[in-house]
Length: 288
Image 1 (cartoon, one colour):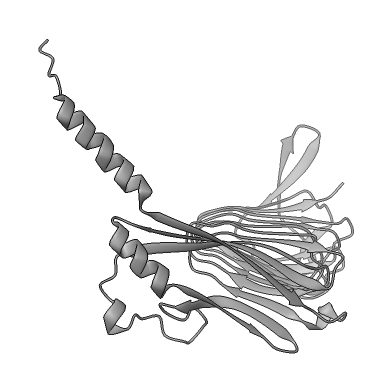
Image 2: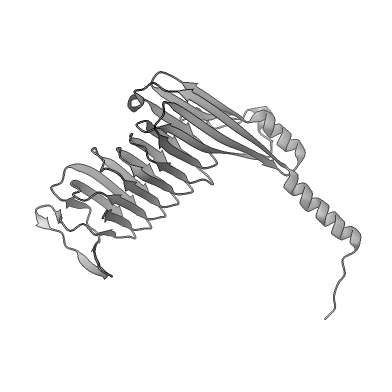
């Protein structure tokens, strides 16, 4: 077997090119603090992100504390510098709301028009914002991202409107009315108290896992093209008849599998919980 030796100059050139590629990155850490009135339950935090994760934690305070990591990358230093000048965050605080969004090179808020102006159209850089946020326990949330970032929320009691596209959503120890929707990823929710109003959960390519307190009373609407609904709640009916179920033994637990049933009553019924997935299953679990 003939071996080819790389000249020393070629090896050094390769090393320099690799080092240069790694070097074309700019990072900045941004800290923001916003005062919120004591009536945080009447306030909403809105985040309109495009690329990057969002992590939110509830705490016993009266401020919204944001730690934001900005990253700009490009194939060369020139475009990194263009990105540093172009990319800007915006913040808008009113009496009942606080909004964080991408202001430049385009406005990420709904119905603002996602397009570059003529001077920036040829820029070749990429950017992301990763949010780590603390909010008062009772604050309401309306947050979303699109690419390369999970959304996680812990210990928040307010209502939640959560959207993602290319990653999952995880809500833990929450209480409020919930709208959670993604396209490519799982939706996972664990409630500290069952929501008192109608809620909705959906994904296209992923599973939905929702854990409720015992004694759940709700009317569930279920829709899936290639999946089933599984539950370990036993008091379930469709219409006035007991639901037709297939009972699977999973160790010591009894799991009920429902297929092609689009309306299921849990307990005495009441508020409507909607579950929808295309390529995935729905798991409605009873907390022990």
